[in-house]
Image (cartoon, rainbow, N blue to C red):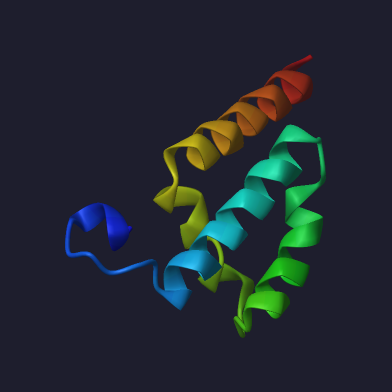
Length: 81
């Protein structure tokens, strides 16, 4: 993000951490992993005290938000059937 801003600085540690968390979640959604079950592990790895501190990654990345929404819609259809 910082490099893209045109200020000539490279990515910050926080940027790499955010990318790791987002890419992990995207991978889990794409491969059918139970994200709710695995999220506490990611939260602990990131040093978050509460899982809800990790949820904001879902909103921060459009692709991740789309995958989460799709999973929710599929689940809703299963419940209705």
